[in-house]
Length: 223
Image 1 (cartoon, one colour):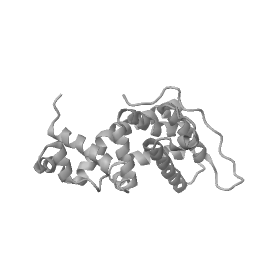
Image 2 (spheres, helix red, strand yellow):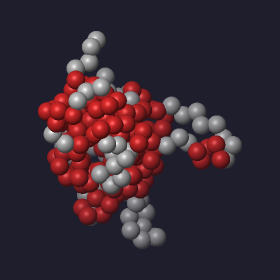
Image 3 (cartoon, helix red, strand yellow):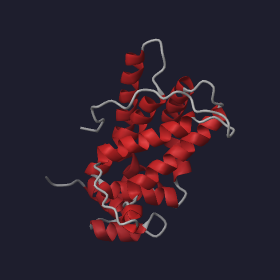
């Protein structure tokens, strides 16, 4: 299948942004590697910033749609109750690990975006509805946790998830232990770990809230 000029630019930009970082990659490098002219880049994307947004949105949008669909399903199954925090975490995290299996280069790019401090702009401009949706779901699952504190816990969740997605298990290698978890097992371990953190109460003598059911047995991955 012959790629369109737009797709050639997107594919090349994704590769170079992932390999070199956003700041270190120039439009001149992208057009040279994609074998297109500068006018084509400006015609389709107008600027380097808008090109980065297009690169990210074409991969993140299906992941976010899968997240929303999975959360919708858990909420329907819960009926009048709120889904437990494990299921809210599963809805957010599991589709991302499915995306990693198909596009490790894109996950590397997202690691660069986090490291270069670009994620705040992306979340502010493109992901606010999704953030609010999951914040509300976490609030229903954990009504006794202050909303501002929930935002901190979501912040920690995103950091732990980003590190896990973009890093090899160096700690296993340093300890001389073979890391043989697949993506689904890693996702479930991360969900269990984060669920305990979301439930914990302030104060050394406070006990965590009761745990909910384990994540569903069917892995949630993108088609």
